[in-house]
View 1 (cartoon, rainbow, N blue to C red):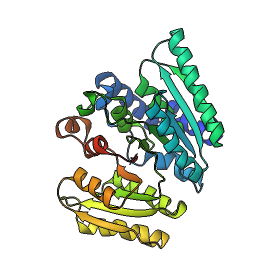
View 2 (view 1 turned 135 degrees about the vertical axis):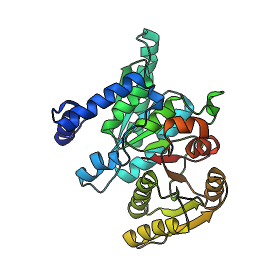
View 3 (view 1 turned 135 degrees about the horizontal axis):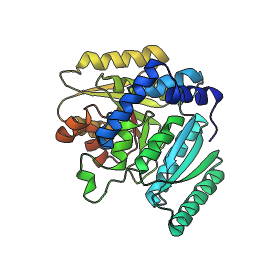
Length: 315
């Protein structure tokens, strides 16, 4: 994968810079890595992706590079087909990644075949691509590390993961979604959608504001139809919803539908997705700290378990 000199230089400074700020950040990260399980880490600050990759580039497109995690399963190829819909809008480069956990020749050969099929599918679709085979027993870590260089990570979040679908922590998806800096496209459904009608689940939080920023881009550059749903909450009232509506309409001079709902957030989101006949849901990432989320659960998880549509999770 090619990176610009600016990206390489700024990444080098973050990883090896000798200023007190960089030394303190690396020390803190190293200590947390030693004493805290990976799935309980909070991940990068909200807005890191936009600050590091979007704003400095000055480009019209947000999603220049898209990382697609590959397993070889039919559901994974549907996730690739869904990501291709974004590539056509954004003129993106697709980067396929397959991780094997051992150096066994059979596993490596299977990985090579998966990447060959990925490259062939991209060539057939006219999509520029690169492909990587990595040997590592920590799949989530590899994905998070590669996500530093991309603007979106595509993961097939199958609706049935045996009993693990009900677990609040521990899956590769949840670790990646918690810690990667770029948006995550979770593709749990069995159908590739056209991405013409988009709903934003909005609660006024910093992560939801990142998703609001993405909605504005999709409505402006893709000419997609948009709707915003806010569920009544002490931190999210009707004024919160109207502020989001005003942000969109003042920015791009287009109407956006709004829905102010009561009750369970995931039930309201699923109902509005059906009423709007929407193709894509935008939402902010996990709102609670990991330990709190373990006990209370997450709207993200509960929505994904029932979703028949792709979900773009922003942080």
